[in-house]
Amino acid sequence: MTRQEELSAARTALHDLMTGKRVATVQKDGRRVEFTATSVSDLKKYIAELEVQTGMTQRRRGPAGFYV
Image 1: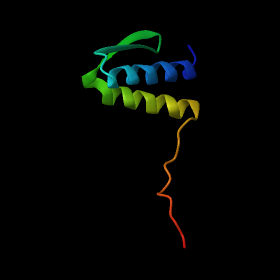
Image 2 (image 1 turned 60 degrees about the vertical axis):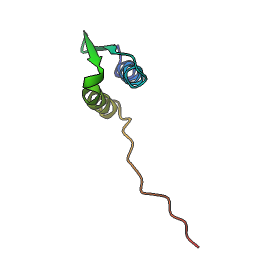
Image 3 (image 1 turned 90 degrees about the vertical axis):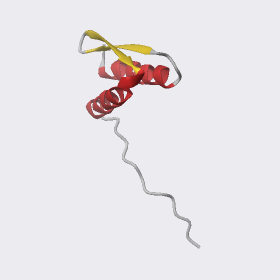
Image 4 (image 1 turned 30 degrees about the vertical axis):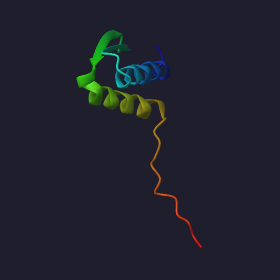
């Protein structure tokens, strides 16, 4: 499984947890890992790690300003 595929699976798992599914399962380093609603923060950290590894991190911008 490529890092991109792992990232996609992790995002799907997070979506499942956030929309009420009690347990989400992903493959992590060749092993099966189950996440529950109480481990959402761990899953978010895992997604952030995968984003760094795949070069998909996004820098946050400041608020858009309106100049008159």
